[in-house]
Image (tube, rainbow, N blue to C red):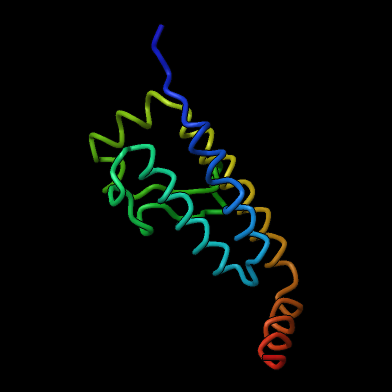
Length: 125
């Protein structure tokens, strides 16, 4: 039986900021950007190297089964693959992606409303 590493503590530390950023997202691009930033931070923390995972290494993919895509560079990094295969990171990433995909879907259903909100807020400043 293989031993699985748990990164639940890192997940719980990241979750409040992730949810807050998803709630503040005003466009589908915001959702994509916030997801990439939060996911790359989480994965870097899990690997133990602050710069190991870059924003462009993780992207939201609403059409994919898991809801995200990892870059080939990241998947070929031995330090990352070791941690990825022996941990609960795939579950954590799928959970984060599910929340981001839901927000993305919500914002994409009515882009006129999103745009009017953006213009309304800009006019009030």
